[in-house]
Image (cartoon, helix red, strand yellow):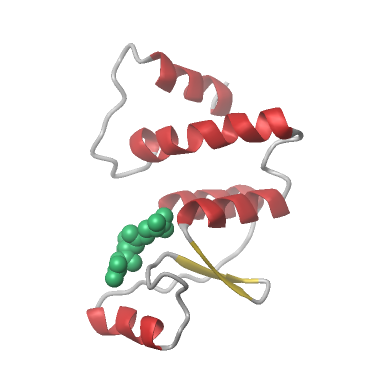
Length: 112
Ligand SMILES: N[C@@H](CCC(=O)N[C@@H](CS)C(=O)NCC(=O)O)C(=O)O
């Protein structure tokens, strides 16, 4: 979910967050048919209940022109999303290996 907050912030979109703190809150969403696969995160936007983190990221980034100018850029971004999620998200338990070329590549792309 952190990555969804990031892309919303990068896009300058203001949003309200609802944190689920009890099983009953999740159950209520599931029972109300709000979640396509019965899982969160879910983002309500443009009349849709978007689920699946990567799809949410794609939608918001594409809508706000943050998802590359062409197919090559989009693919580069797409390739790097799992690495960003794994290593760079706050709270991530995995730390980037010092000499990992993959991680350096991501840093160079997003933090040149
Ligand atoms: N593939 C989903 C996975 C989402 C997921 O694992 N959600 C967990 C919470 S972090 C969930 O809703 N668990 C409740 C359940 O499966 O009943 C995504 O990428 O968003």
